[in-house]
Image 1 (cartoon, rainbow, N blue to C red):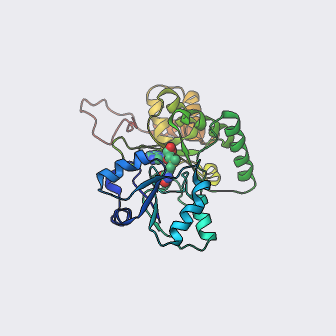
Image 2 (image 1 turned 90 degrees about the vertical axis):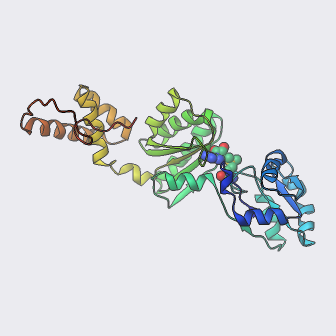
Length: 302
Ligand code: SAM
């Protein structure tokens, strides 16, 4: 039985997950130290045994024998859903091939949680695990993805990533895929949970200057979404903010085009329309009244 466990918040453990783990004859886990903590918190008394990348293939015959003998074997990983960028696939495939019945207790998974919170189309989506850690291999894999998109692939893209590589990965994605909206899900279900949304280049710059900490799942808009213009309201709000700070039109257009991934010509047209609107509006009498919420200065995103 594949049993999903929390990705941070222990309150997310399900009743069926607990019942299955408590009733198991053996709990296979990625790292017995991590699962021992879960077992202590939830009074799970079943023996724990390590099944990880390095011993999985070797342990398959013995585990299949236990299953064939009717023993209740549960598989968990350190967090989330087993097999999803975690061990267990080879065991499951061997069990299926041997005709051993298999089932799962579904539960948390960072990829699905980040996808659903991203604000990007949930389907079709393509989950790609971790990008290659080395820059050259990572860039080559993004170039292959870009070629697939040019050949017609259009899906929201989901990766797991280590915090210290996040900024470089975002920058490589911006280079390979071009202007594109994305969302970074950080520390999901935990105390410092955060979902930061923006254009790839903007997010890359953010995490370059303020390096991320904790666990990260990255979601990137599909190719077709990138072609669509970002919401006019968002572009206008950003332009208005910059122009109100006396930034030149030229500079504001360049910044907003880079931040949102919108075509520069479209941003320029909106900047002109904004300026025209200001010029057309009747002169305002200076007022000493304090500005009302929702009027005047556009809201800050900070
Ligand atoms: N099997 C797990 C699942 O279903 O979510 C994923 C295991 S994978 C080895 C671990 C990676 O998932 C982390 O390095 C991080 O990229 C992502 N991840 C796990 N927990 C997360 C969380 N709470 N918030 C954001 N990402 C998370």
